[in-house]
Length: 171
Image 1 (cartoon, rainbow, N blue to C red):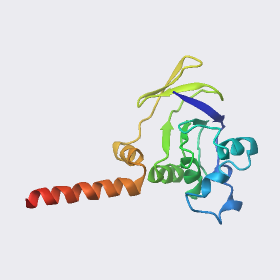
Image 2: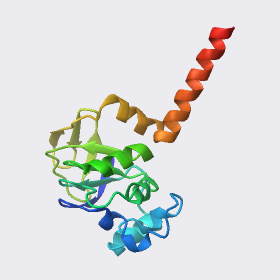
Image 3: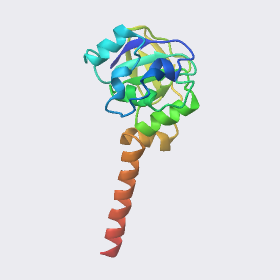
Image 4: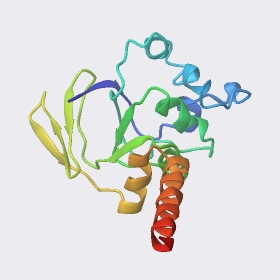
């Protein structure tokens, strides 16, 4: 079960998620401190670790629009947040997948801050309201990258598996 810790509307830009004035800080180990910096109460809760990993940010359409800055995804990944949105901006989605940020495309999602969500591969169940919403699953290859923790861990796993197969075939 995951709790909704922030509800946002449509067209949430990367500048809202990770304000451009912090672009001098780009290391994934440092970006989380600036997540939603212009939402000071929420930002403080994140920095003080008052929001548990696996908590949910719910948004409307076009989440992550605007610039292509990957820091918008890395700052959310740093807190292990899950983003459930009606849909995502294309570049943000790819950056998020590459970094292993868990995304859920749920075109009809309705939830409020504090609601408890059960996130399944095919649907999201709002346990608070009793409503169920269909999920648009990501392609298997993209989901595999997220499950591996991002593109680098995924590639590492694939290379190690290939190397293991080569060693077995030589034996």
